[in-house]
Image (cartoon, rainbow, N blue to C red; front, side, top):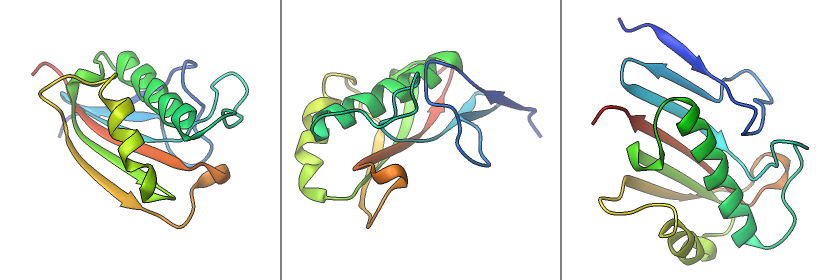
Length: 129
């Protein structure tokens, strides 16, 4: 069994519970869910859903880079929205963070997210591909 390495960076919000920002096993990195918290203040970003989506991608990017990869290494992305009508906005903003080939992806409508966030994302990243 591959050794587990815990990934932690101050460039993304600190884990606020019984989890790690990411766990690396071999070449696979499991990135925990990120909500739109500012890493410095641990407060939700101000502004519209677009600001929240960008902050989540920035947080995921910071964890991915700390693990030795980038958003381009994400093989699977899960998106959780409290309002699925925002999905088109996710697609629009995602296009500025990702290039083809895009990761596999799921989008799920949820009743609520931590701290009143409107969006959360988690991912699985494969390094050295």
